[in-house]
Image (cartoon, rainbow, N blue to C red; front, top):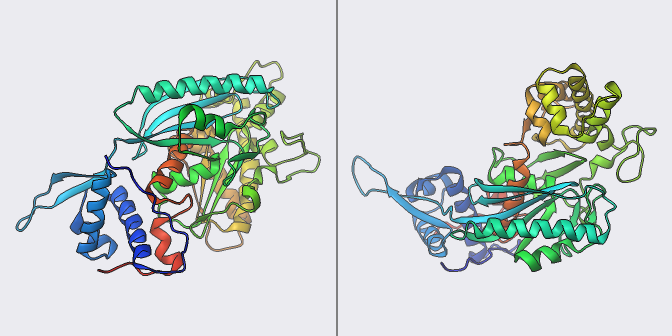
Amino acid sequence: MQASKPTGRTQRSIASSETAREINRGILLHSIHLRQPVSRADLARITGLQPSTVSAITGQLIDEGWVLAGEQGRLPRGRRPTYLMLNDRHATLAIDLRPGYANLAVVDINGKLLAREQVSYAPDGRSTEQRAKTALDKMIRAGRALRAAHGERFFAGLGVSVAGRVEQKTHRLLFSPNAPWGQIDLYAALERELGGPVEMDNAANACLFAERWFGNFNEAANLLVVSVSEGIGTGLLIDGRVARGHDGMAGEFGHMMIEADGPVCGCGKLGCWESFASNRAALRYYSELAPKSALLSFSQLLELAGAGDGKALCAIDKMTEYLARGLAMLTVGLAPEAIIVVGDCTALWPRIQPKIERELAARSIAAHRPRVAAAMDGDAARLRGAAALVLHKALFGEADFAPDSVRKSEGIATARA
C-alpha cells in the first residue's frame, strides 16, 4: 500500500487549485465516512462537486489505501454504481492515561474497538521517577502485545489521551495535577518504544475529535466536552476550531473556583470545580454519609447507586448539582451548541441529564439552550478520542482541521472542475 501523504496547508488565505483540491479531499473523506457505503454519483450530489472531481479524488484515495471500492449497486437502468467505504484495515493504538491505571485499545478507522487492555500502577501524583518508569514499562509491554496481535492492520500511529494539558509544539505535559507523569518525558518515551507518529492531547480535547469523527456532532461548530473522572477537564470547539489558548492551557475550567473555602484540590488550591463535581468528590460525599463504609472506587459507588442505595444516590446527586452549576456558568460565557459529558458517571445518565438541563434552563440568558448529551460508550470515548487524534492528522494533515466546516469558516469555494 502506498504511504499516505499529509494534506495540511500552511497558507489558508490563498485559494489555489491545490488548496481547493485539499479542501475537496477532506470534504469527500468526511462524506464517505458519514454515509458509507456510498457511490461516486451520490457523493457528487451530496457535496455539490463535479463528478469528474469526485472520481479523480476518490481514485487517489483508493490508490493510497484509505478508501475501498466495494460491492456494485443495482439501478433500474444505466451503469451499476460501485460503493465506496473507508478501509477498516487502518487502525490506531490508543492509550487513555488515568491517575491509577491506563486503558489501551486497538481502534479501527471507523471507531470500532478491536481489543482493549487495562494496566494498573501507583496512583500517587507525586510518584518518583522510578515509579513513573515502572508504570510506563507496563504500558509499553501491553501496547506491543496488542499491536502484535493485530499484525494484519495498517497502524497509523499512537494516540494518547491524558488528564492534563499538552503543549502541542513541544509535546510537553504542562499541567497534570492528578497524574504521575511529571517526572519523565512521556511523549519521547512512547515514541521511542512504541514508534510514531504519536499524537498526545488532553482527554477532553481528544473527545472533541471523537465526537466529530465517530460521534453524532459532526456538523456542530461550537461544542463543549466535559470529561468527568478523578478530575474535570474541558475541551472547546469554537467556530470549528479547537480552542487551545496560550501554551495550550485553554479549557482548565476544572480549576476555576466555585467556593473560596472549599476542599483542597489536586492543584493545591481551594474550592476548585473538580473538587466538588468529580468522581473523587462523589466518593467524599458518600464517605460523609457512610463513614464506616469501605468503598474504594467510583465504579463501586455506581454499582450501589444502580442498585438503589439511598446514600450512594445522594452522593451522585450532589456531584451532579455541582457539575450542573459549573456547566451553567460555561454555557452563559461560551454559548455552545451542545454539551457532551464523558465519563463513568454517564452510566446513570437518565438521572443526571434532567438535573443538568434544569440548571441550564434556570440560569440561561438566551432563548437557545445547548443540547446535553452523554458521550458514546462511557470511558471508551477517551480511547476513541486518542485514536481520532491520530486518524485526523493522518487523513487531513492538520490537528485542528475541520473538513465539513472549511467552506463556511474560510470562505474558499470548492473546485468545480
